[in-house]
Each structure stands twice: as structure tokens, then as C-alpha cells.
Image (cartoon, rainbow, N blue to C red; front, side, top):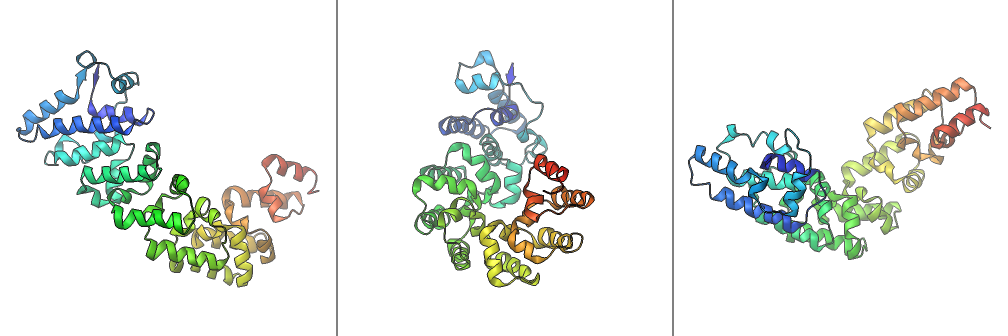
Amino acid sequence: MHTCHASMVWHLHNTTPFTLSVLLSLYASLSLSLSSLSAMPPAAGAVALHSSLCSTASEKPYSPLRSTLLHVAPKPKSLLQSHPLYPPTHAKLSLEFKEKILCLEVMGIDAGKALSQNPDLRTATMESIQSIITFLFSNGILEKDLPRIFGMCPKILTADIKTDLTPVFDFILNELKVPENSFRRVINKCPRLLTSSVKDQLRPALVYLRRLGFKDLGALAYQDSVLLVSNVEHTLIPKLRFLETLGLSKDEIRNMVLRCPALLTFSIENNFQPKYDYFAGEMGSKVEELKEFPQYFAFSLENRIKPRHTEVVQSGITLPLSVMLKSTDEEFRELLKQGGG
């Protein structure tokens, strides 16, 4: 049975996370194989690379890694094998770059997506990437967290530890008052924190949110951290101004966002505007109901608001906005049967 490097990447994606030491061992052996080929002619190098990466089970001693790979059903084509930068037609691509693609895929990261979102990865060294991983581990991040963190924010892979990452962890510790043993929880909730400038983004957002009335630092850190990576001038303030155009006062808006912080994450064009148009037009409702139930904007217009409102109208009953939307399907059916009582 042959196990090649391309199918191996797919196997690694579909097994439990490997320890960093196993990954580094794999990377080290691959580096040795690739570097030894650099002086060979292309054709001879390709044959040698295939021979070094594709071997029968009987030719290798037992190892937990290989045992795991051999017991997983093979997949015809892996992410790496189908990657546009890897096929033989791109023979001029450096071995180091191909090596980088493989190692990203082994860690569970979509290399194509990462490279497209962060072009700086093309010139980043494996040593610098490893330094960042080691730094994250030292701050409580686990190996199994890396695919999600790097997948959402591949720019972290080329961040500067001293000027980019360390200030963020200092901010989380000193200004959000999060203990070190809870760093992982905060970062997993919002990986974008690691790509945000403390001076230009995180601190100004925190100051603004505190002025709005967000006093619970724990809630900001663990639940609503996405607000900290939202630009004050271009994201937060325009949404508050839109709510003012509906006839709401600043104090009323402040109370609404404190009760439903998610309001500050919704799009004006894709959420606020169409939902308010339906609310004021088809439903004929008054803005006072939004003051009482700002969570209205959190429900799907097509899948929840419109169908429920239509059934209520057809049934000839009246339901409070919160009851109409928050009740389960079973509870809603029962309310319709009882005539809203």
C-alpha cells in the first residue's frame, strides 16, 4: 500500500490533532528531502522526491503517525494536490514555498485561502511562523485552536511578536482585566483581536464602549469582543446614527444596545433597513415596540419575521413582538390555537 505526501495531507485533516513534536518531525524530514533535491535536474529531482515521500508500508518501521495514516480510508485528491501553486506545471516554484504550503495544510490551514488573504506569507520563513506558534502556545493557546485562529486571521502568521502580538495580550490582561489562564477563551472567541492595533483600534473602541455604558469588562472580553475590533468612526457611530433616524433618542438607543449589544454588529443595508421597512410598513408597528424588544433585529426576516407575522395576521390574533418571535415552533402553534391567549 502506497502512502504519498499529497494523500497524507488529507489524512492529517481527518484525524485527531497531532502534537507539535510530531508535526515538526514531519516537517524536518520533509525539509531534508526537499533540500537534498535542490541540486538535481528537474526530472531526477521529481523521481527522487516521489521515492522519498511514497513508499510501501513494509519499507518503514512502525510509528504511531504512520499507523494512523494507514488505517484511514484514502481520498482521491487532497487540498494540497489540487492547490494551483503545487502541480508539476509550476516547476519553477521554490521547494521552500511548496514546503510551506504542505506544512500549512498539515496544521489544518487552507493554504490557498491563507496565501490569498495574506500575500506576505509568500516570503515568510518557516522559522518565523514557528516562532509565532510557540509564542501563542506560551500564552495558553492550544494546538487544536490553530486551524480556526489562523483560518480566520491568516495575517497572524506574519505578525511581529514584539510590536503586534505582545501589546494585544498586554491589553487583554491589563485593560480588559482577563487573567492569563483565560487568554485562550478570549482569543478563540475573537481571533481578530490579534490582528488589531491596540493604539488605533482596541483602546479607542474600549473607551467609546465604556462611554456608551458598557461597564462589564468580562462581558466585553468573553461575549462581545467583536465590538472591540469594530471601528468607532466607520462602524459603531453610523449604526447609532441610523437608529436615531427612526425617531429614537440617544438615551433610548443607548438602552437598546446595552440590552442587545449585537445591534452594533448588524449591517445597516442588509439588516436594519429592510427589517425596519417591513416592521413599519407591512406590520404597521410603532417604534415603541423596538424600544421594548430591540432583539427584533436579530431574527431572520425571511425565515422568522415574515412567516410568523403572516400566520398571526391570517389567524386574526394579536401577539406582542417578543412573543411572536421568541416562542418555539411548538409554543407558537399553541398560541395560534388558543387565539393568542
